[in-house]
Image (cartoon, rainbow, N blue to C red; front, side, top):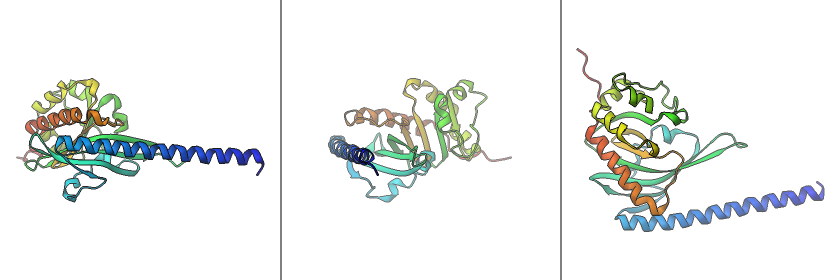
Length: 233
């Protein structure tokens, strides 16, 4: 190895070490800030794991199966609008070692023990290629609501149950949401998650994020059907 190569190698190692140090410092600062927000909201800050494992049992939808190096961080739990609530950061990597990309987003998760949801994933159509085929099937279209089907892509391994779940009232509500927000919804069991793909919310904006996502969740649970296919005659 010549001197020039050795020097560049040392510089590379130092640069990586500096970047990793900065990431760690920023991560600690975020955790400290989120801890304060949790206290202000009256939530319990739990870090990287739920104290009660049952609170995370429904995190098995498309988002949580993507990529590798999946990680939950800055988990806080409490109650919002009468729903059991978790707010947390979630990250994962996709790609090969030489060209890997990291994705981070803040998630609002809301559980209602009065409804059993079929697994589904809903995303704005213009970015639905990132979700395309996540559940191994084609998107579900509603011929009676062509605008909804133009705006959103809905996927579910149980199409009949999903059609029962997405009532005309729920579809109308989802159409009324600000398209610029580009909300994504996923659900299964008792839980609906609401988030922006690849967007992590600043600590100072978590209260607003909670207000918005909980309002969506309440409307979802109020307007949704049973999620059970209609009986065949």
